Amino acid sequence: MMRFDFYPGDFMRDTNELEASEVGIYVRLLADYYSTERPIPDARRFKIAQCESDDDRKKTQWVLARFFEQVTQGEEVVWIHHRVEREIAKARPKIEASRSNGKLGGRPRKGDTGETQQETYRVSQQGTQQQTHAGEGEGEGAGVLDQGGVGGSPAGVSGATPPSLPPASSPADPPVAQRSRARIAKPKPARWRRVPADWNPNDGHAELARQLQVAIATELPKFRDYEFRDPKSDADAAFRTWLRNASEFGSRGRQQARPQSAVSVALARVAENQAAELARNSEPSIFDDWEHVLG
Image (tube, rainbow, N blue to C red; front, top):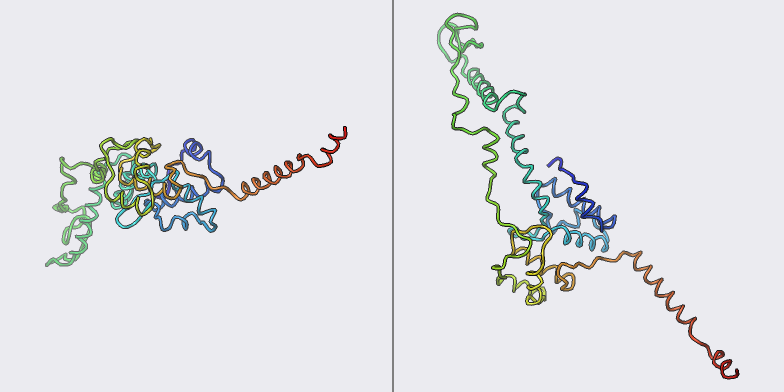
């Protein structure tokens, strides 16, 4: 996609708690998602976000876990953003229509219908065929081509027979735009914010939990009780992401621990030193005790 719609209200609400560097990481991930119309590859997530330090990598991982969902597509692990997927699907009919208009010579003029444009295209194709076969006839006038036809009968002369053209379209044929929309129409899976009651983990989840050293019996009730902000459609993929996040963030489910910046660590150390100094100054000395005894 060359462009995408931007909703400032939604963006400010969803990124209100982010730091400036985390907002920049989020914007780069969105720009790559829209420009390629593909999810973020897990192997290239730090390259796309232009991360060089360990602190930036932690922030990128936190942003991905906050706004994206990690799934497996074939043999590749990717990060999906459901809002971006909906916006791309909404814009795809316009993109297909533009491609169809380009094949027919550009966008039709005002008042022209799809049938008129197809008729123009067929006339052009017919003229090309006439020029290709010009000169193959026999007798006087062979090889002469004008608007009247092939050979012998110039335009404007009585008896000239214009070339016959096939009908523009059958009455039963739908317009071009409707045919393009019909090709991409797919049944939409049921979406939910809380995992369906009849869903259960499979052997693959148990194996993944064993590899990650995560207690699946502890994480499964949390997963069932959690209500997702963005609707989901694949419970198996959602639970795999849940287990990976539980392993990476200390089995705390979706409550992600935000990385502390260097400034926050420095301020905390200064506060600890000041508290220790204050405690040392407030301790009574031996001279204070003797003054109390002597009166």
